[in-house]
Length: 228
Length: 242
Image 1 (cartoon, chains in turn cyan, red):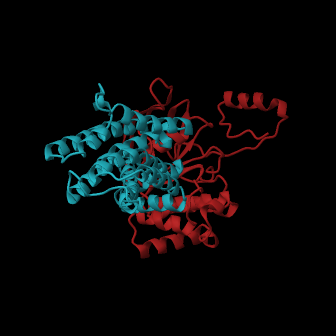
Image 2 (cartoon, chains in turn cyan, green):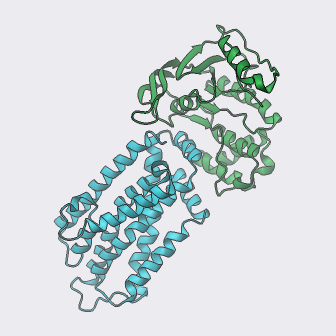
C-alpha cells in the first residue's frame, strides 16, 4: 500500500499539477490575512473554511493524474478494488497536509494574527487551529473523490461538483440555516473557534465531519462499481 | 478459479453486457477468449481480473497474484520506463534488489533494455506496450490476463508471447488471453472461450477441433455480404480490412 501511495504522490509532484492549488492557497491566504490582525483561533477557523475547496481540488488532482488504465493495473497490483480506492483516498488526504501547514504558518509570517488581547491563549489557539483544518480534510477528500474523473467524467461536471459542493458547504452552514446537517460542519467549526471549545463540542463536530464524509465516500464507492 | 453465474451491466437500466456466464479455469490452463468487437471480451476479462465487479454472480478462488495487460497501456505517466517498473515491483512487494533484478530480466526478455531510461510519454506505442507486459510479469502471476496483447508489438516480441504464456502455465499459473485477430491459433492445448451476445461458450482443450485462419480477398462492395454469409455458415469473421 505504501508503494502505491509513493507512486501516486511521485506522479502528483512530477506532473507539476500540484503547483496550481498551492499558488491559489497562497493567494487566498494572502488576501485573507492582508487586511488586518485577528485572534489566532478565530482566524484559523475561517482559514479552514476558505481552504476547504483547495483541499478538495488537491484530492481531485491526485486522483486524476493517474490514467484510467494505470488505475486498473493498480487494482490488480494491490489485490482488490477496496484497497485501491482506500489508498487513493488516503493519498489524497496526504496531499492536503502541505496546505494545512501553509494555513497554520502563513498568518504569522504575514502578520495577520496577534495573540494580544486574544480570548483564547496561544497554545490552545494553535491546537484549535490545527483541529479546525483537520476536521475539514475528510469531507474535502470525499468531495474531491466525487469530482474526480471516474465519477464526474467531464471537466464541466467535475468543476460543478467541486465548486457547488464548496459553496453549499458554506451557504447551508451559515447560522440560521434550516438544514446545516446536509453539509460538513465547516462553518459550525469556524463559529466554535471564536471561544474556547469544550471537549464535547469538539467531539460532536469531529463526529459530524466523519459521518458526512463516510456517507459521501459510500456514494463514491457505489458509483465506482460501474466506473472502475 | 470458478465463474459462477456472472451478469454484468454498466448501470441501472443498461442492457446486460454479460449474462449467465459459468466457467472454470484450472492451474496450468490457457483460455483463449474470442468474439467480435464489442461482444464483451474486455468486460469479461476485467471482471475476472477483479477490476470490475460483477453485477450478479461471483468469481471464486481467484489467485492472489493477478497480472493484467491492458489492450492499450497508459504511457502518459511522468516516469521513465525503469522508474515506473521499479515502482510497480515495489507495489508488488519486491525488495529493492529483487525489483532491480526483475526489471532488468524482463526488460532484456522483451527487448526493452535500451528504452529503460526513456520517459514513458516518449516511448513508441510498441515499447509502451512492452512496459505494460513487463509490469504484469514482475512477480510470477497465478492468473495472467492479457487483453489483446499483440496490439502495437513488433514481430520479435509477438513471437515471445506464446513462450511467456507457456512459462506462466508451467509454473502452475492460469492464463486468459483475448484475441480477435487469430494470433493464438498456433497455440496448443488451449481452451476456447467464445463470447457471443453476452454469453460465454467454453470448449475444453481436446474437444475443440484445431482452428486455423484463412485470409480471403473480395471486392470492397461485397465485403459486408460476404462477412454476413460466412457468419451465417457458422464461421468466425475475425476482421474485415478495407
